[in-house]
Image (cartoon, rainbow, N blue to C red; front, side):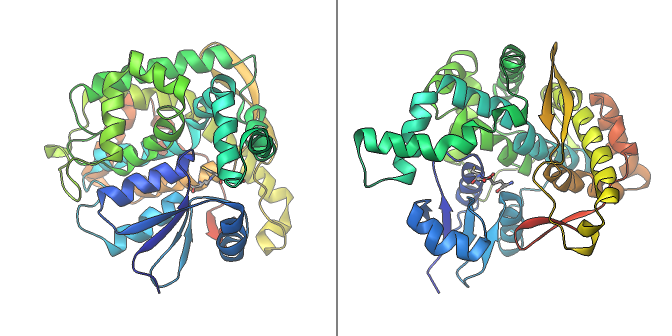
Length: 368
Ligand SMILES: N[C@@H](CCC(=O)N[C@@H](CS)C(=O)NCC(=O)O)C(=O)O
């Protein structure tokens, strides 16, 4: 038993920032421990089975992994000031923007980190993996440990063919968010929602904290900088309010439209490929074959660029959350959700291709 919650994470880590911001908003007592090789060996690998952060150990000694599962487990324990809005349009929009922040904005985050902030990133990875070393030796450790991360770019679809489109799209997104946060503290009022926590993953560790990206954000989106700072130092912990009458501000719509335009076709294709993959891999149903991180490649389009990227079944596990919410609605509520989706070009979510249900078992993706 320990006093509070233990978070194993790191400042440069996407999903650690998401969980840290949530813990601070909820005023949940926690201590953060670095992802040193020793902590991977002593805590993360034995409890989770693979090398990943963030990891949460509860005061009762229970291990939790995946930022979404961590937040959901804590929402049950700390119900005051829920981060899931109770009304239809806000809740649906928040769930969708979590998926967008968690899975799609990895594309610009990883592009800027490894193509625009390389030396800083190597030095940060060196400090994380070999805090006892200095100088060249630490840099070498950084180079070694960063290989799988920097090497992931082509799998995300980040190549010389897409770099300009990624920057155009990301800068336009910053402009859209800047117009919103010029008026509102958070996405849906004075309380951060699960959508805000999804967006803070990429927008804190990578796009605010990495120096060249931070400079860009300060230059073209000062109101996004203000929001990042509020997310990391909440002005109304355990408080604030969502806007009355289920209002989704008009300034949120361009962001949802961008998500539907860029990401939704990829999600549809992912669902189709995954259904086929499961048919062709009976071991997955019997539990003898693990679901791989990627199940092939498909083409995606961004702005005027086209490129291959890996097909990630994990995205569907995240998408089940807004899809389940949609499926739970009927009558007037369903009509309100449909109205929002029609306004942002998201009608395909109402008639989404069927795919085998996913769950997480032993901290890994599995068929339900
Ligand atoms: N969806 C997971 C992703 C966790 C994740 O990808 N963490 C990164 C650091 S931010 C990591 O440790 N990756 C190691 C790996 O994927 O092998 C979450 O929300 O926690």
